[in-house]
Amino acid sequence: MRNLYILLFFPLLALNTYAQDLEQQTDSLLLKRIKGEPLPPDSLYDVVNLFQDINPFKKRKKDGIPEKRSGISYLPNLNYNPSIGFQIGIKAVGGLHFGEKKNTSMSVFATALNYTTRGIVFGYLFHDVYTRENKWNLKGSLHIAKMVGLDYGMGIGHPLPNPTEEESIINNPDRDRFVNKYTVYGFNERIYKKLSPGLFVGAGAYFELKRNVSTLTEVSPSPNEIYSKWNGFDPARNNNNGLMFNLQYMTRDNPNSAYKGIYSDVVLRTNQTWMGSSQNAIQLLTDFRKYFQLFPERGRPNHVLALWYYGSYNLSGKLPYLDLPGTGKDPYAKSGRGYTNGYFKGRSYAYGEVEYRFPILRNQFLSGVVFGNIQTVDDQMGTKLFKYWQPSGGAGLRVLFNKMTRTNLCIDYAIGKFGQKGLFLGLNEAF
Image (cartoon, rainbow, N blue to C red):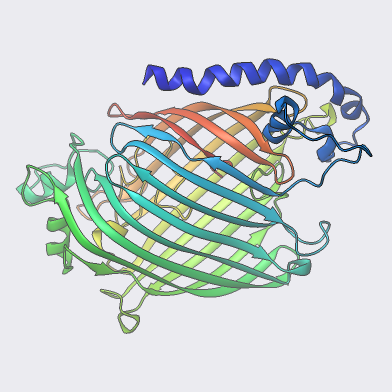
């Protein structure tokens, strides 16, 4: 692990020194900048600029006119986690406007293919498209994966009073590790219609099939088997299919790294047996994000205080064990830095996070963040939502990867309870 940190941070120190030399080029622009407005892309410096400057084989244009920059970022998706082993893959994130920038939000596209030494293979396609003048918004994804998922049972890690043997296993207050293996096929699509500036209403459908579910454990029965028996599911396979009804309000200025504005999304998910779902169920999802731009008069627009609240509430019916809401189970799998995905989970889940983002270099090549979060669950065994909370927090470094789309390379280190901690790498902010 120590060698991994050296490989990650030593090159960044070298990049920092190089970028500081170029920082003086942007000072005059910063002093002239209108309060609160983003800097012109030509005054910023990103990884693409760095590679162009140090490339000895770069062809210089004779007329001095710079080449048009692409809105697509490619990144080798490297990671390490003791639970999954080494991960290698490729990720591409792109953004463009299908109308005038003043009245049309940026559309975002992403795709990735990853492999880990523990046998996880995961690929996906994602889109978030806004048509001209934001009249329509289409969101959707397609994913196929051979998964090895860590499992720590249900609940928030708080012991139950006088538990039965099965309740003790599934509550798992010592947070012993189980490993679930399965194959998943998923597809979802939502369509929103603009009602007024920033306000959208929509509907959609989702299909998620899990097959060949098995648990590697010395304890029998496993939490998945116990929960499935309690609630009438097949522990080896299940379907989570249904309809979505959505209400969205959005004024944030950029989906990749917002400086100001609001993003909120309320989704009613209704699992339907007539669509092939294992059982009927209704889940209400809420996602609220607010961005405060601090000190815009100082000429640094990426001085931001960001707030995030995410909730998944069970209104009726039951979900399969692997589909229970919890840590990292939000649509972008970004919640709960400091814990592995699914570390806490239950019938209902609530999560809050605050993050302070600050510039390091004036040309925005390097910036930093500090963050803290809390989460709570309803565990079906008497512990209600909001009764107990678990915290985590950390700090991170941002490298401007593509200034055209405001895409950052994010390197975070977070610490939670129960000995949980880790390094988190990726493109774009957590929220």
